[in-house]
Length: 233
Image 1 (cartoon, helix red, strand yellow):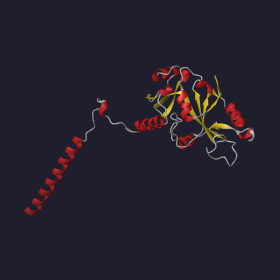
Image 2 (image 1 turned 90 degrees about the vertical axis):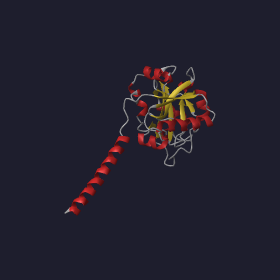
Image 3 (image 1 turned 180 degrees about the horizontal axis):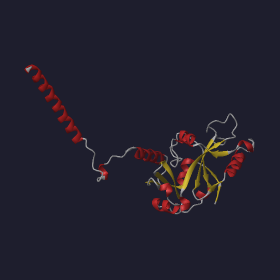
Image 4 (image 1 turned 120 degrees about the vertical axis):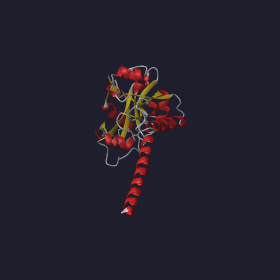
């Protein structure tokens, strides 16, 4: 009987020691105070900085120096253009631009990728938020670019599905940018952006809450886009 009690006492002591150790560990790993914002780890602490760092490196190594990245709040796209302009320090609401991926739904069966920039399956078009994109002008441009050797009916540019856009660019909706895309998609820059003064515009920066401002002339030198008048007000 005494032997059984002694064994129980030994087991009880071991359990109490383990409980003490667990309590100590819990104290050390207790959540940090929400009152201290610097102590709260981000849910994705390196994603945005990695994106900015990667795109900045691409720009600098290709001779682009006049650019800037800015973080915006999560509800940025709920704001009116004037508020977005002020948040970015843009010259006007006309300097706020977006990149959209288009697919040629009537391309010949042998046109399946972006290997021929004159007759690509996909294009990225950069237009102002304040303008209305005109797909017909792009259709006419591509027809003339190919010297009329491809029937005009074989050009029908439509907005690519979001999953296709993500697969081609590596960027999600509201984050698409022409810099550092997974696929070398030919770019069409609306002529209205080229005519902006000052010549520094804003577009997506690779993350939904990251925007890129860039000198137009340097953007053109680097991206080498087709410049097409493809919008109206």
